[in-house]
Length: 148
Image (cartoon, rainbow, N blue to C red; front, side, top):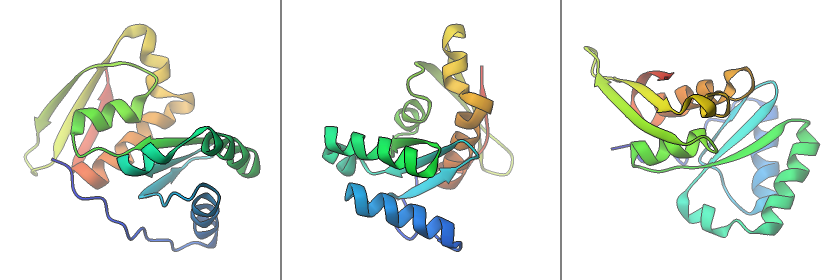
């Protein structure tokens, strides 16, 4: 079972504040969290907010992508670990998730995807894997994630 998403995201950098506020203002959706790399920004939203997304919002996401000069992804949070993993690695189809408890009480995950979906699951420069590690460690106490 996942932790309840922390609604108080620590925004300690003016750039983070700008990105967060810009996204919220344009979409009307307050993200739970976000993850940024050199090429992408991923916003984590609640299932209730996901139902609000319409075609207009998707056009706004394209506009955000142009504004930030980065690809913008929206990921739907789920308290169900397997469903959340599927959301993190979309459009790749997750076949199975193997979980193992470690000595320190945290989890280790092996995520099985079909061989032809491996590239989609990793993303450019493995950003989806790093993003998954960030969100899963924060909300599910997962220490290690590997795609097999």
